[in-house]
Image (tube, rainbow, N blue to C red; front, side):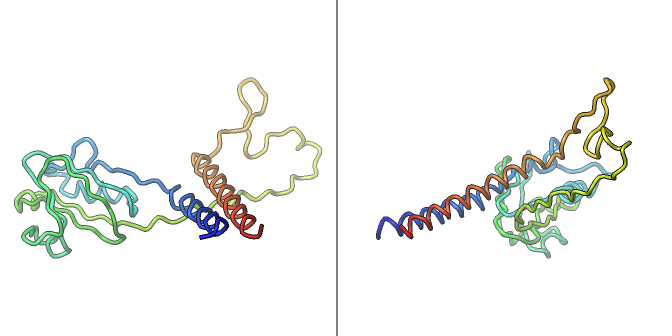
Length: 199
């Protein structure tokens, strides 16, 4: 393999890694601090509510912490009938980490049918991560009136000292910066690879 071809392949590999490596996987502790346990009588949907308030993506993991119980990954029938006799996977180690490797609906139940019927049961949807899109705000022309000069703009406010300063940016600004840097790095790598191929 010629050095030019090798350089081009390395460039594409680095670009691929930069694109797909920037999406970071998360670990979710199931149930938060309470873990995988029998819910109180008034919270029978504890785990389904917990799951519905989160976004799970392929590559994320779930951590189940429990005592004297188990976790079974089952099909839809097993979920609705608390039947763990034919599980996709079964765990009883007390500290189980499950990788979310495929998009779609996943069903988790206690391996103990009585505990399952008492609410130790969870259904969640795993999504494919989508690329982050950033649409910068539109810039409108300020009015031509003389009284608008020096007035704070929409992204500014006046402090108690009377001088305008910019308000803090949105919480997603870090991810926007990361995407911008990632795109720049990808373009630079591919450009260098193409330049080396032509040389």
